[in-house]
Structures are given as structure tokens and as C-alpha cells.
Image (cartoon, rainbow, N blue to C red; front, side, top):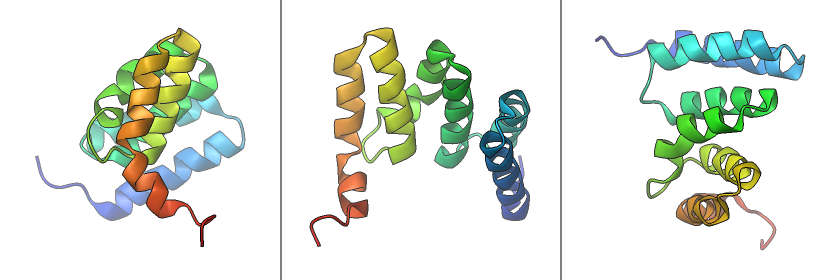
Length: 115
């Protein structure tokens, strides 16, 4: 498959955020599914589809969709957070804490409180 066009990806991501901001969750989930199919390796896209599931209250779907990205070393911070929230709701506390710990290096760099 040809590499994803970044303009298309950015436009779809903005459209998903628009729908999430306006509480049009089903539309956001539909577009996020299409975006995930268009560019499946992008961690931002995995985060967006997991966020849509989370806002809809589908914790098992959040768990399944973000698990791979959240548990790898240097994980996407958003994926880890949404995955940990799903684990909290599903009662899988250790797995959620483990995902947050895996992404610790990324969110410590983003933290500006100690400066």
C-alpha cells in the first residue's frame, strides 16, 4: 500500500476532534475507523479511535484497540492514558499501571512543572 498522504490524515484528525468537541461521538468513531484503516500504524490514529470508544463508554473496545500501542516501550502518552482508564473501569489495575509506567519517559519530558 502507498504511504499515507499527511494532508488527508491531518484533515481527518481535525474532523474527528471537531466531532468529539461537539459531542457527535458516533460520527467521530466512524471517521476514526476510516482513518485507522487508511493509516493503521500511526499511534495518533490508534489514540483517536480509542478516545472515541472511551467517550462512548465502550471500555472493552478501548482496551482492545489501544493495548498494542499502550504496552510497548516508549508508548504514546494518549494511548497509555486511555488504556489505563479502560483498565481502571474493567478492574485490570496492574495492567493499567504497567502501561502508564511504560510511557513514563514520554510524559516526563512533556511535564513543565519542575522547570
